[in-house]
Length: 150
Image (cartoon, rainbow, N blue to C red; front, top):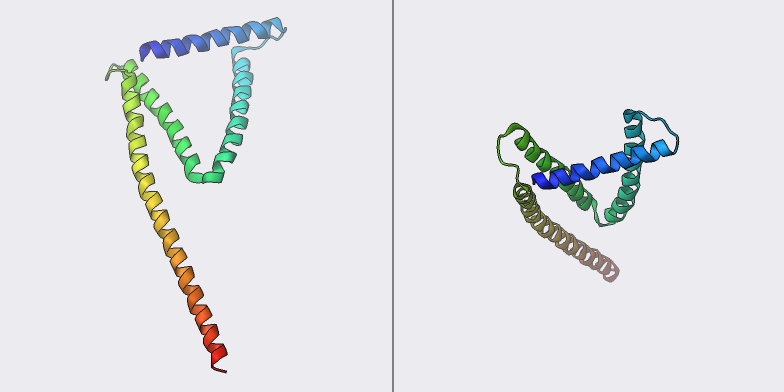
């Protein structure tokens, strides 16, 4: 876990240094805060447009899919933060397996919920179909009796 975080930090630092070099080569004099404003702003907009297209497509399948993706994303951030906090405070072991097990816990409980949800939605659909068929039989029967009684 520690090695993975160090690798990610090294990639980010290299990216940061390369961006500073490119900005200086272009003749811009930006402070670190200005650089963060532009880079994170642009990076955020790219993520937003990609996310918007993907979520718009996924929304066709229902808001449940979007809720799952959002929850999973938040959980990934939280479990990484917990593991980093454990390393900083020395109150536990920082292990990648803890992250994996935590996320598996969410997935297991989510799929249990999803199974119940699917059964419930199926039962509701069957009941609605049964009601609409009974309603049509009752209405057509009353029309027929109206015509026959004349």
